[in-house]
Amino acid sequence: MPIKRQCELLNIARSTAYYQPIGLSAEEIALRRMIDEIHLQYPFMGSRRIRTELAKKGHSVNRKRVVRLMRDMGIGAIYPKPKTTLANKAHKVYPYLLR
Image 1 (cartoon, rainbow, N blue to C red):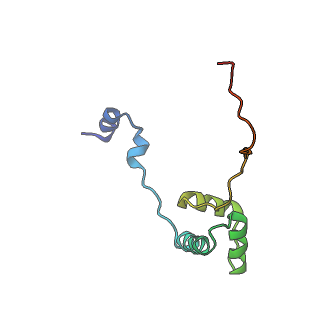
Image 2 (cartoon, helix red, strand yellow):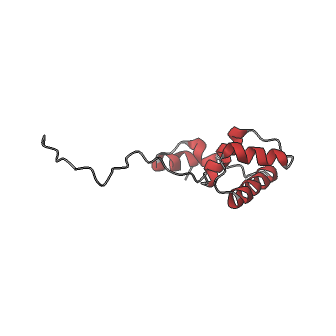
Image 3 (spheres, helix red, strand yellow):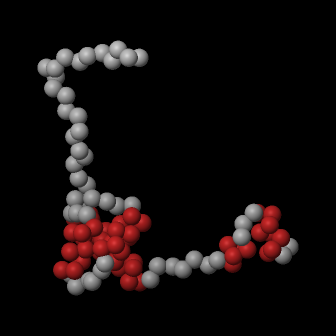
C-alpha cells in the first residue's frame, strides 16, 4: 500500500511518515550530565546559579539554554512556597452567611 494511502487512513500528514528525529549531540549530553550533577549537589539552585557554576567550570552557556535543558530533564529549584494565609488560632472564625 502506498505511503500516501497509509497516511490518509491514519489521518496524519505525509511529512510525519518521512520524519526522522535528530538525536542529541555529544556536547548536549555532556551539558545535561553537568547540569544534573550540579542539581544533585545543590537542589536549591536555579538556572541562573547553575549557569554561573558552569561558567566557573569553563563552559559558556546561555541561561535560556540551561532553562530549556532543565525543563526537558524535569528538574527545578527547591524553594519554600509562599505562606499567604497564616490564621491565628486565637481569632474567631465567622460563618459565611451569604450561601
